[in-house]
Image 1 (spheres, rainbow, N blue to C red):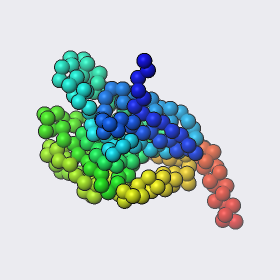
Image 2 (cartoon, rainbow, N blue to C red):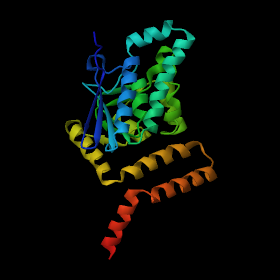
Image 3 (cartoon, helix red, strand yellow):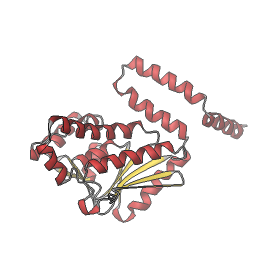
Length: 256
């Protein structure tokens, strides 16, 4: 018997939409869901026409974190099994940063624990005003360990400490003030405004956005000199692209 599909991928007019499809479980994470998200990201990345990827959740919530079965498995699993499970989630976070198109989390409802980590791992976060964010892991003795590497790059040290040690939920407005959210959207206009936001990537160079994304993240752990050298190398690659040649021709044509 075929297992139920937990992720839906739809690609239309250069925009890929990846939907977590476990609304009855608040799109809670398990091994199958994580594997299907990774597969969908790779498929979208392979389509050279895709300019942006939207990651969203079906139903009322974006993602509530690990499901009960996954938590129960953690408590009885061996070290090797827990390590393999943790590395699978780590691969997902790394994949979001390594795929060519920008990945945009469209968050409605709750994004909690691993679900908040999933949203934070995305390149951009759009949030409905009624949405909620939080890392409640410490309340059950757990540690939001891998997401710490991402969170520290998004918010200040003291804000990160507050979020991960108190385990409290914050509303979308507070999340935006902390730096977790790029743009707040009224609930009734959410779907339309997400589409409007993503449409802006149609006006940019596909190759330039991909190179810029790669440069931004690769330079993260480099010295100033190494980051500049990487930037110089990327600059040369960009200069040789078809998009730059077309862009220069258009600019010169307008200037004449």
